[in-house]
Image (cartoon, rainbow over all chains, first blue to last red; front, top):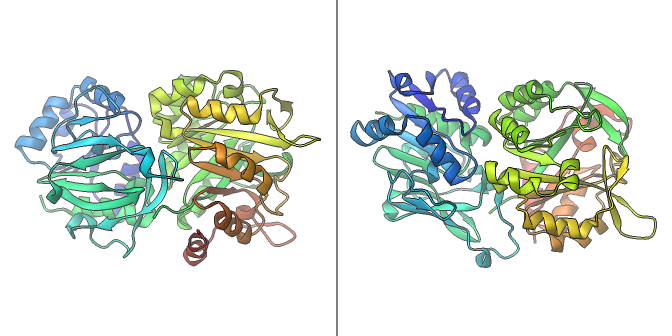
Length: 205
Length: 256
């Protein structure tokens, strides 16, 4: 069963609706007791980095999550700010990230995106670097919805699954062991986004 | 490559959807949830829903309606109407809305932009400016559905909003609203150089050609419309519509 982590940040219902339509079992996880029977996790996130980190910390679920993800190797996908939280740190905030993937979150360099405003907002194409199951059965030129000013940068480039270009190329889908991250919003990216969430639901544990 | 966004704008009045002409004579065009479902099927880029009653009735946003819309909506949703405080914005955000549109409240208290941005992130704070041509050139900002003129200078205010951290600016032409004869190109030409956040224009689109022209002229820009996506034909029969994939590709290819 997929556990959608509800720590007060992010559009929980949008994910729940999509899995409901696919008949993929899910539950909303609000405290450590709710982790029972959960075999996969979704970490949504919107807003600012520190706000999201603080909310997760205050939810009382942080320690259990560390254990599930790092020791029990439960597959997890961080989405938007939820992805950025997987990194060690972010230019946007003071707080430390979860540090589950060797990465930093950086601000787009305005000087490189001439005539392109910030935030990066709208539908952009993904360049799939590695054909893993998480990106299977997407359109040949899949477009996803982005809404962000900071981007994820992996230390180990073998963790990169897909990139997108906005002034410069940046990493937008990453994977290290059981840990996945996606910068765009699959829950708001119509058929491609739904396919990606379905792929995550169907990953072999 | 990033694509220009094509955004239906829906106006809520007395719990139904209406479409106005020059901000007047709202014609009933249907039920909000039903419209969202149709735009889901048509894979619309985004959706903007503005409650045009909330501010004039001086009431809270209708949270139940917003929640119903957000649950149904499979594309990014921007909600506007009646938001005056950080708490209200946060509450709407928690209902699953991606972007929050502010208008009259920020004219009274511009720092609301930075206060809300601090909570929900700059990317989610949209400011909608309803503008109308002045008698002798230039534009004024209006609020309360075009009934109250603001004394604030449009150009100065646009600069200030960006300093305060607005994530998107929507320019809505009152003169062109519902007229369906094309966008106010002069307005956009004049203000685009001042805007370094994503920018969306609204008011006047009557055909997809108007959107094509907008994109070929201005590149990556948010193209929003009301009438175009709810009416069909010269008698304005209500029919919710949205460009097909091929039509959209043609618009995107027009970028120089």
